[in-house]
Image 1 (tube, rainbow, N blue to C red):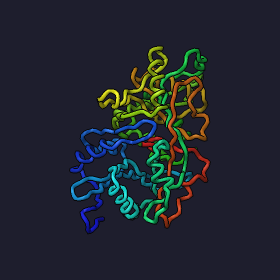
Image 2 (cartoon, helix red, strand yellow):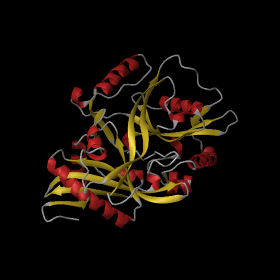
Image 3 (cartoon, rainbow, N blue to C red):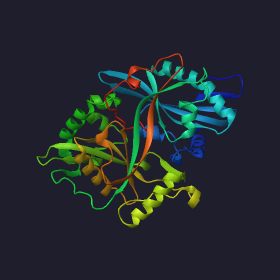
Image 4 (cartoon, helix red, strand yellow):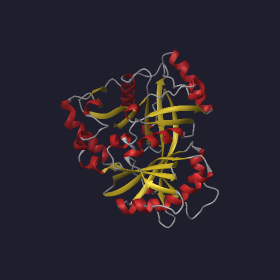
Length: 380
């Protein structure tokens, strides 16, 4: 796909890794926290560790890099149907008029090219609702143009960060025990996860078909990292796998808005009182690029709120002293709200269907659904 002018779009190769890293890290994500994301020397290691096929595209003006976008190619289960979905992520556009207008010109043909090559049924992406620039550009533009894709909301969810808990909270339920995985737990854990999966849309096809094989061949997950909750009669009633953020990429805070700044100051006091963990100083204050340290909670499954509380406490106490916890949950899923007494923050997100103006969104990618969403790997 090219143009008669020097401006063109092409698929990235391994030789573009260093250029991609430099450009990608140079452009921050705006929102409650302005963040730059840094990857290892090999830019594509992020997608490889997720274990998903991917396509990354570059928008270039001669030798100047103006924009990037990646698509993770995924087969996802929706009730009794499997759909092949391209998940858009890592969109970065140089902050100038030429780059922004040029990207719009190329984006719709790019969607059609991916649809034909990968035989995709549809496209999705996650957007942070505190990112005003993204919201104004994609979700609520002042003018609709024929060359712009149509974004339609599929689901709302929150990204929660747990930083501690207030004192004098009720004790954990003594009938619930949480401990690390043992090899003897494998069969029962597989049965528990399989049962929980049946009620979720957006679950990976491979995970739905064979939980053991999915985890076994994953570069991200491992049996040994599971924490498992048991009832008094030794039945599995919950599980979670906390994953260090540094395994995938580093999140470098540049600046906090006023609300986030106030929360960071509060966490400094909470840490002094030994009831919480603080956030990393932004670059604007320290003049050093320091990463946020947190654990992402995957396979966060439980039968009721008391189990959730026990799993969160176990994940928190087994993490490092400078790490907080993060997990995603749908706003309609009240059971997954942070337990009372938690010191936490929430960022609202939307999962959006992306389509060309001449196509309707797939029914499965609209709000006309009542099954919860499997959010692991969705919010990246």
